[in-house]
Image (cartoon, rainbow, N blue to C red; front, side, top):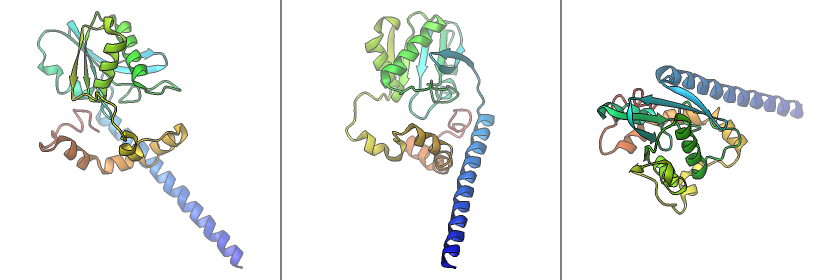
Length: 225
């Protein structure tokens, strides 16, 4: 009798766990579909070494390539800066592999030299002649790596709040964001990661933009969602 009750309880708990996981997966898919509806792809796609790169290319003249930071996408530049340039510039912003609408190649590590090499091949594929590379935050670290490893490809770099040094204890500070297992990263990305990040989106943005208020159009036009 006791054994059958325990078996029944285990079956109920297993069912609840399955339902909980299924609800998280469905919530993730719904959030992703809504984000894609609000911020659809606006540019072109280019295949580079198994990476499917989404980018925007606007204007004619001196080329400038914009590389965004962690947790960002090309709209951070396109929405805020492109309209401020006058004629005479070709402005190109790309979603880094794994961000925005750019898909990372299977087995890619996302290291700085790897990402710098992708940007180099991207510049080569577009036939850009010694562009200026603008990097923000982590994109600044990629721009610096690019300048060291491929100096002849560009005319210079411009850095906006760049990541410039290895920081001790960075892995510990990142906490749950750092997941070494590829399988566990995939599981988290389809269950807890998106609903949790959505829940804390507003306080996170308030913290990032403080002491100013974050722009009202940031979450959609700026690609924040």
